[in-house]
Image (cartoon, rainbow, N blue to C red; front, side):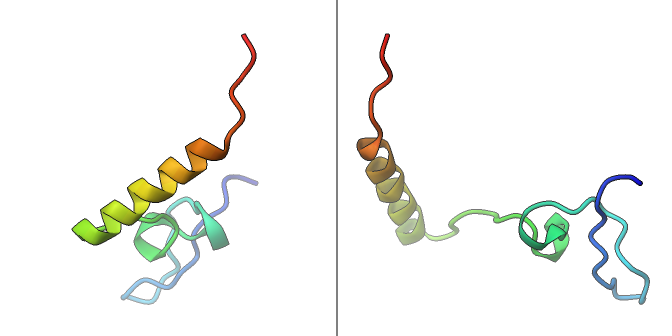
Length: 62
């Protein structure tokens, strides 16, 4: 028993042995992690979404 492995089939046919991450326990090469927005428009949408998320949070008590 170890870490969950990706298990996707590589080009030569054997199962990928990289550690599975993210949704579906696939590795970074097989769809386990997002690389983030690539275009300027996508980056702007991500920034706006982050601002909306932060605005909705209740400030912590000190």
